Length: 412
Image 1 (cartoon, one colour):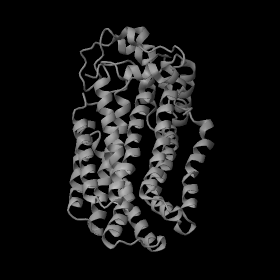
Image 2 (cartoon, rainbow, N blue to C red; image 1 turned 180 degrees about the vertical axis):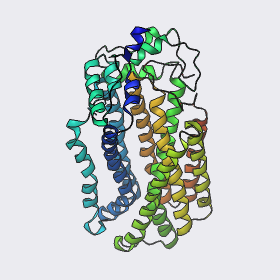
Image 3 (tube, one colour; image 1 turned 30 degrees about the vertical axis):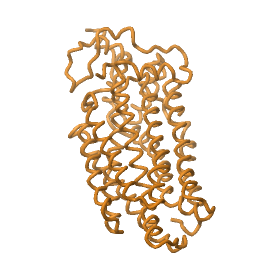
Image 4 (cartoon, rainbow, N blue to C red; image 1 turned 180 degrees about the horizontal axis):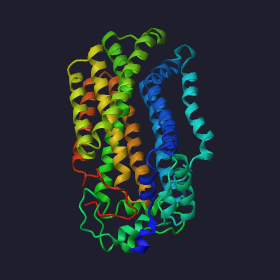
């Protein structure tokens, strides 16, 4: 008892520090990265049509341009997920100026990330798991100083050592079940995992495979639908114009309506984020994701029968609101189901599978719109979103109220 009272874990230190300047700085740094990606995604809505006209591309070539954006994201998502699990988390308007200036502007947040990289702290949980306790204490002490609080007394110990001593009969609402025989499966720091082979093997182990495959389906469906809705903002409008009038208006005559549509649909991200924050801890991860995905199906369904400008705007706004909320929640859920040793690899691979959805979306769904098969394209989105909702419903357990684990757990 005396030894336990004289020690504390990373979780204890994080809880004692509360929410202060340190967390605000971390959120701000992470937020800049999200801003960079969000700007790129929004630009895809109208850069594609502009590039097609200026470079005289075919519809297929335009789709390929968009798809290659996601090829780069796929490579980055997988490779940096593996790197993060081995070397740490830290090391990982306007229209009149033309689309090139818009692309240049979208790179500004990425440069800001580089400027603040030097002062970005490493994850103390990762450091503690790797046995680098002294460095973990330094990060926690820095956090405590910024938040004007004191760390718990005693020495810092790894959560994984405590988890092995816990009784496996704990309820699901307080901690994930841990097998008594897990002592030999704790991930030890045995050097770098070249190519992430060991980590991928753990993700597909009997205890994780169900959660991993369902998570891949959820990421694929969310990415295919989310990026598809972003692209449909411009593609449906252009497709309707081409298929009904058999003529293509100039870029300048289309700009006003196009930018308005992009702004309106992009604004859905704000209530979508707020909604995800309100429901994720009240109703749980699974129910929140499933309800958002099925509601998105409802918003898209009217477009099967009619695609007037006002109906298209309302439907895409509602669908993007729900999909963005679902995407946010699945990104919250993913880190909670994996142990620390393979957490970012698991998230990185799941994100890569999502990028595959982003790659296929322009080649399949958007190409259908270009070929005047708008109804078929909408039905395809409906199917993907619906199947994603089903996959989410079969997730093995709810992580609401559970703490992160450092050891491998049974997901089945």
